[in-house]
Length: 170
Image (cartoon, rainbow, N blue to C red; front, side, top):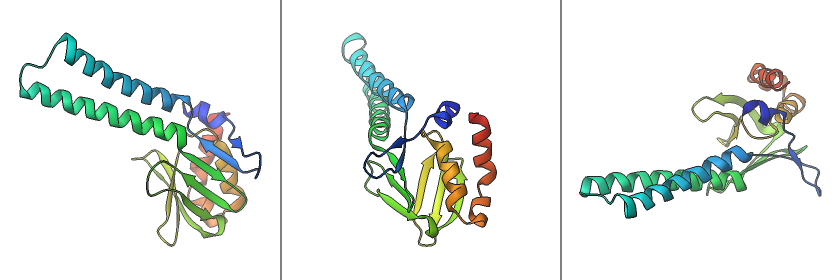
């Protein structure tokens, strides 16, 4: 999936010319499968094999809640999460209340990689953090933008990882 995401070009905004990174179809399919699993669990528990005691009802409730929430979150990310890369900086948009977030290129002073979230973390000195998933379509373009727009000392923090992604995509 990373190889396809790295090779895929970002979208271009026809009005501003900004480049837009986005989640591809695999994220949406995973969300749909998760919601479908919740529906199947509900259907089976209701009609095929009804729960016999409170423990089974509790377990079914937990499974339904997990698959439904996870599926809806993935579908929302797939449909609405975007990272806009412009000549001025980066804007991250997502369906969550703490977004959107914006950082100008000159404000960025720290870049890292979060293995827990599988994403690049872009930070400024004011505690603004933007997470950019490494499997978003157009991630190779982000590598080029980091190299062109960041101070060499800032780019050096993540340059090796970005070069690895570029090699993997080719």
